[in-house]
Length: 266
Ligand code: ADP
Image (cartoon, rainbow, N blue to C red; front, side, top):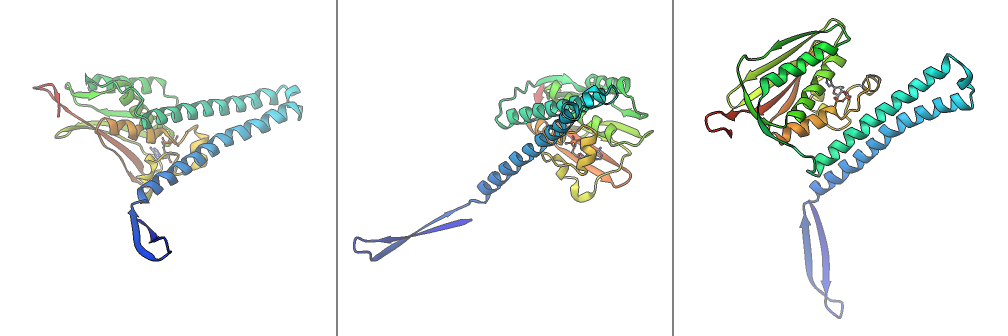
């Protein structure tokens, strides 16, 4: 709360009154502070790959690494990886910005989500390179939800990629879909390093990473879960994390079920 006092005087300069303006600036200040932090984060995130690229390009040109048959391809690979990271980052930022301005087209339709989930998991099992086991528990029935299929696929992809990224070799990833009262809950568990209790909510914030270096090494942008949260919000669902440090993490999200009888949203 901010209070502004103005003294009112008459023509002769005598005190004739007091105007008090009381305004709630805390919300506005918070928004301003978050915006400044965001701009500062984006700048850092872009500067890191750019400075890396500059040193490698300098080594190639001035340092003469270009003539070195072994080093040249390695150095070019680094600049290529950094470019890819910046493209991912800018794409993520654009998506967030569109969602902030309610511009992003969310095309919701009534779908049976079960085959969609199987399809996503099949794709992950097919493409996996790491030694990882997938286990799936998905009800054998039709479950209708009112969603943008591409966006929900994106959320599921994000969570599954994280589960793989943070899993130990030979770890098991459990995918569970559970029909609850009015909603479908999807839970994806891994056997990775886990997340400390006080950080469980933070991981859905933009650019928050438990381990910055590790996330960078794994090619992360720090925006995946923030985007996922925005998507789940527009679907009127919830998203949260539970974890036992050293034992693993579970990311859960829910989607409201459709009332099958009347075909309306419940
Ligand atoms: P990133 O691109 O860094 O993976 P995300 O927004 O997807 O960004 O996740 C934010 C952070 O949350 C990660 O950097 C990581 O510290 C933490 N995190 C997400 N998923 C897991 C997981 N399954 N196990 C452990 N930590 C996780």
